[in-house]
Image (cartoon, rainbow, N blue to C red; front, side, top):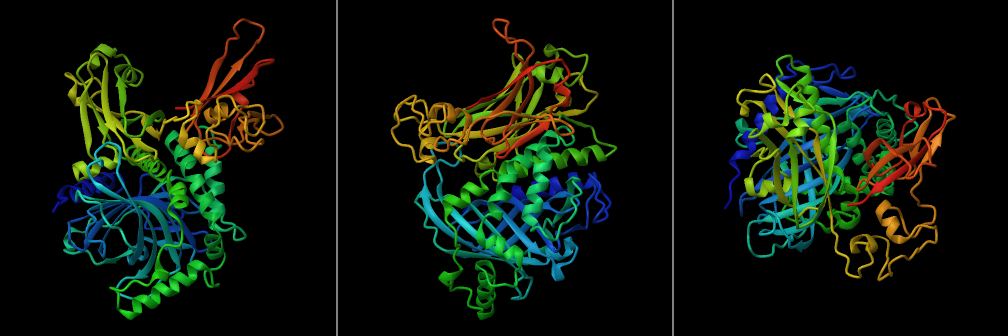
Length: 581
């Protein structure tokens, strides 16, 4: 038996810290950064969300606690919320799980707003199915029995069998502390009243993190409107914080893939018309009315495959984390008593699954933030590194930090990961650890670290990792081959992460001078690559002197950025460079 007493306390601390920066509820359609809103707007009745959760239970006890980090999309703003739930469930040998999901809900009577009170009155009915047991290559989960899962969740009004027009689809992993492989059959979790009630952490939200002020267009489905809004954030330049732009980059592909599912588009068009989702909602309601919840009809099993759902939800963890990082900063800046400096920016680390990776914070990074100081003054200072998500299995809590000292100018934190999904790590400098304090007692939240995990196995030694070749159906190709004959070898297309079987999929840089402002664009980018825009005034010099203008991780979609500030001279040459892990 394993207990998790720390998680509830940690979550309550997070809620309290944020609530202090936003004591008054905001107005629903006029949200204020740093202030909580009691209701949010809808896209002609619809609200969409993405997020992830961690679920804990005790062995052979059919009660589980779930703590969710959720990003909500409304016409006026993007919001975040912390959502706990308690449920009874049928998979009694599952001690811990992580799920990553997206969903949509239609407000009662297709109302123009959705209230927090209504949302908290809904109980989830989650059907999940185990796909396969796996053995992680390393990290804190390597000693656990793991199973890959897919899940579909529907919602009923609490204490009733009334199912509302809403759904949530996702994929994840379930862990058992048993040393034996676990059996993960078709199972169900039914939300209930929190027992004992006084331990319920409560719903914390809605907290606005980006005011995008979309004009609801009834002729467009909500997913399309959300995708358009995320694309606008990506192309906005410096209007939004770097964490907000990165959030949009990670979540855009999720929304686009969701809207491309026929059952999703049909349901969003009209939930009253028979579709696969509406039929499953009806079947769920019928099943609840039988009161025979110990029997699970096969027709309620998730109707999508794990590989395609996992590919869809893969970026959600990092995207949600970026959203919350933006929210923490907004809450701090709205609090007059805040004594923490938040540095905007992202540093990308490419990591290999199952192998040690070291995250560094150098004293020079602090010198660039705290003026009139030298790197030597930060020797011995303490740096806190956010513990990655899967390490929750070792610490049995969320929000844990590992504290390390700067030694010889650098603090280093080493981890080994089993999960392949990108994620964000926060790093903070504790000013009180310096004697005397070097920043007037104010801690510094440094640039976020984006960890992207890849597998570099290359069995045929053709300079292309096997996982990437399998993705495009390539097998045993020799080095230098150009499968689609577009002038770029397969190895070059791996570096660019473009499709080696499609001659139209190439790394390109376009300049549009007809627009106002003029823009550069990269037609298709990869979330797993870093892009660098460079310029040169004269190509005749040997070697040409290239200047870095712009660096950014890819978004999984087209990247468009303002070119006006780069078009100042009489003539210039530009190029885009891409780097692979």
